[in-house]
Image (cartoon, rainbow, N blue to C red; front, top):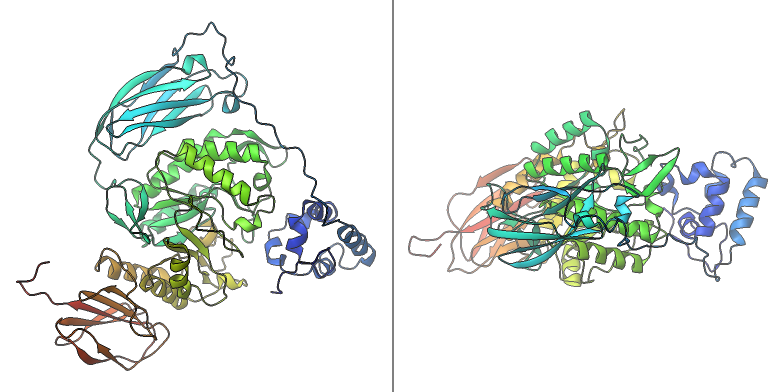
Length: 597
């Protein structure tokens, strides 16, 4: 693809993406070629010169005069003049007069669960007023106090006069709550509940541990072995159920998924539900979330939790034909606050502020900073929070970014860069998009299962976490990377094998470099894992501390075999290897009965 251009003024050689970034350029293209800006392949054209795109675009390809008129309007845009923007919605604080002053404080009917296991959800359910627009007109929070102190928890409107407030406790013991609201009947409702021992399998939210790694709130280590299924919750019950069944049999512990539906290659079907009231034909009311949509999303997140899988929720993305990507700041803030209020008490949620943030042309750094603050203000649990790039990396050193969520920037090198990225940001490196196993025409979606498996291993021994995706052509356009369905590739079984290797090793696999030509991870004097990737050695020499004796395993990462070599090894030694690609070697120290474990 041609390199992007950045001229002082637009001309036929300006990359289409640069024209579309400017609202005036976007308006010109949309007015003349509405089908182009709504096209599911628009993003495959971004890097090409706008003149070339017009010469090949249906409707104007054979009409030089029409192309000339469009280009004339584009080149006349004064790029050195500030971009005019429509007046955004004005934020209006909820009025203290929402309910009549004669209303009785705290009179709303309330119910809640008296006993809640740690890391599950306490829910306060309230029957309150419904006049006006309670999504906007009513503010609801509660102060929840327990053994660790007091936190403020946001509530939300769920339609039909129903309000909910959810809290995820992490400590056993007595908790008390009291509500605050501008709606008098919802204000001052108080009560208590007991938090009991966590149920089996409930470990709390995942957080950063030991700088570059992760652990659940109870201290149990977590390894993100991710996959991407962007729009799987928008496909209807049959496909979504197949997705859950596939995940149940797969090695993945994290799924990247969009809150909003997606419009892109292989994603041209309309979803059954929308996040806001309205329709594609009539438009959407961004001030009125659609409760049925959110309830459906909650059900799927809970089902993932039942499989031990984290839901890495993407809040914004640019693959949109409904207007969700171009809401103004007030609507953006309101949507994010609502999402956090509804979903923050789910232990298995991660926040991804955006997928390919740099393709959301109407948002800049200040917007992302503001939205990150909305999340932090409304999320008392400190869920993981990231932002994902297309071309240009976001500054992952920002204090609110918990880990680097990476899309490759080099066609070939990705996992190899883990070492550099760890050093650059001093945070966990999660390569959420390193290219996908598949056979579509896009370079990001046609690597082999062997190559994807290699990238997983390479990233692991360098101390990072690589993610999976699958993009095999399907007659009904059901590609796993977006719609879920069935896994058809060869890499998941090999990724499962890698997971078994990792789980049998140290709690944390840290890089342990030694030789220039092979990455190694482990713990000095205890455990080493070497990965040879696409090299094919027939033997290897080692030089280690002669006071420690090791067993040696030769691992064929593709054929998923482990061969224990006869004898033990120490100091300077040589081992035979089968001369094939994708080999790993594991050395484990032999401890005598006198040595501590």
